[in-house]
Length: 523
Ligand SMILES: [Ca+2]
Ligand SMILES: [Ca+2]
Ligand SMILES: [Ca+2]
Ligand SMILES: [Ca+2]
Image 1 (cartoon, rainbow, N blue to C red):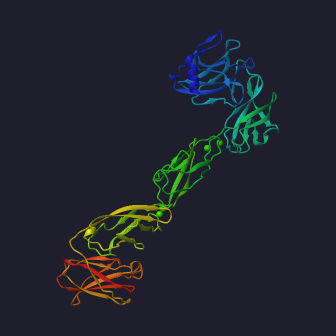
Image 2 (spheres, rainbow, N blue to C red):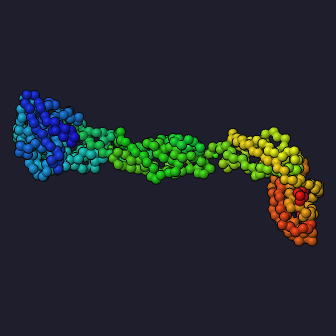
Image 3 (tube, rainbow, N blue to C red):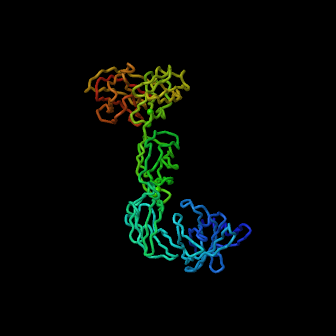
């Protein structure tokens, strides 16, 4: 409104043969007020878009505007801004009647009061060039929705020969009479109005003054108030792990009575995995079920009126099968001279899924075989110096749920200049039995290997959970060292042992073991 007025005033106004140069330099003034007015000239409303209304202090123009259509009353109305540097100045008005091509003095005057309004869109202030005759006007006080029952909406002014007189107003029992009460000249709300249900009320009133009675219809416009949203909804609250960053989790909506209100959604505090993009919750990082399976988000919804509410949502992260991520081999070389069915190393497979234990398979290979249960790489033959070099093996890990990882490994067969000697003992013994082997410490390293008879026929360990330990005694019976070991084999470094003979006892907790002891003679 200010801008429109400013443009009109800066560009001046010309109309018909009669040129008027009412202008106001708004930048010169500190204060403003607004007037919503219609103008009657000799009892007839000005109704041409070229008609104008100017505000003046003496001869100085303080505001000027052309008539425009009033969307509510349908009458041509002047939406006039008036400017001043002091309050309580007496503002006078002049109208330009384009049909008559005349400037006409208006008799109404207004005392300037900053930031106030005289008249309203729904109930414009009536200006005239003559003393107003008899009539009834409604002056609005507050027509906001959500009215408090009993609150004053406005009051009626009954004019006789242009002067307001004391009156009593009653509401005729027609139209929307039942939402109002009236006392004296004051109109009050009887109920709490809701703009979104009904935005105007029509009444017929009778004003009884000493000098006579006036019947008149009025349309009371309800003023919309921006009300807070009442609920926040999310149409999707779960997302699969591993989805692309930016995946939409769900759409946010609200309940808000106000038609065409605009809602801004935000998170009350930043989240590492999710963000809001307009009205959507999206992922903003890689989502991993195994790290976190839900996130609490507090969503804030704020409308154009600055009314905000918030609601907590738990976003559930769904578990998806992860492909095995890694196959590792504990050793990548063996000495030439290693006999068949010896352990080369152990495979370890990583699969994020808590209960996945992927199967491992080895592509056909004459050099090595796989102990499937325990993921051990086993020699399938005796290696000698002709095997020195590098062997490639290809492993496939399959989690049985569609996750497959393939990896290649190289095994170096190295000539260390010595060979293994096997000592077959072939002792069968029961749970309480121990196997005792005496060996000379003419050797600096002993490889003890105990393997599973079920898989390979050479050795017997009756269950996968078998626990084995060894104890080494001197020939005189003194305990030298003791250790729990992996049942599939272990290296025993005896380089620090004194030159002597020792007894090695290998114990199991299950019994049924036959062992074979191999060790490397010193070269
Ligand atoms: Ca509203
Ligand atoms: Ca709202
Ligand atoms: Ca998973
Ligand atoms: Ca998996």
